[in-house]
Picture: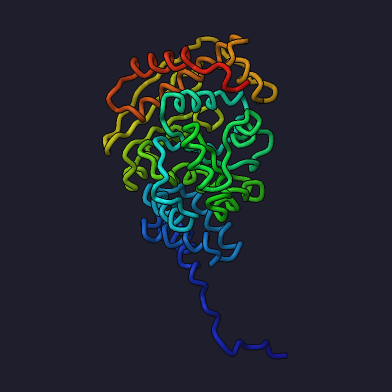
Length: 338
């Protein structure tokens, strides 16, 4: 029996060319340029790809490792696709929070409160639930009765009232949130986990980002430079969140107006700190109220606050930032979390 023949040739899918660029082999594979990255990721976000293509694309990038140009293009695609806020809505500090806490309590939330108390408008965005066994910022803030928004109008009201607001990623870029939730299916982190930290949807002048691996600092800094981010700070935080580990020296990778600088933040605790059994918010409430003295929690809070001040205030150095963080702590409203 003769095999059936096709009457018409198969037309290649438009997205196939981007997969081919990334996966053509050792000698022919190359990275995407910024325009290609923006177009490719825009197709993914707009549903113009097949699920098989999305998985192949993300994993090829994972193996190759993304470039600053690719990251910048991906971020631009997200900004073009997301539900955009009104131009009048502004923040001083963009705080990305996508990892969740695993080893310690989320002390960085107290740093957010101190910076908000100092008059800075702190906008937080993140995602929850993509990795089991972690306490995510949205859940922690809800338990502490801190402002979690449902849309940009809520964000504006919360920033006006308390200088602090958290908006889940799914509320302003749901296609990216769906990609974030692919981790259990793929078994690996993807570039989505990196680019989400750089979204800065309110175009805040200063941006705080945490990385899992020190080598990613240069990648973030260079992508920020391409995107024209005025001020940014990148460092390896606890569990991938923006929280300084007081038992370790921390290299703070600062960038102000395209000028990169590295600041070494020495450890403030010399003894090894064991992981907590289950991260929760009750120790935060106790430390904030003054009913409990937790050296680790206080040192993590003060160091993270100082880091935030460094990116917000290019005119001050580390010693001044640390002194101001301590002063903010001493003058905190101890009833805020009661």
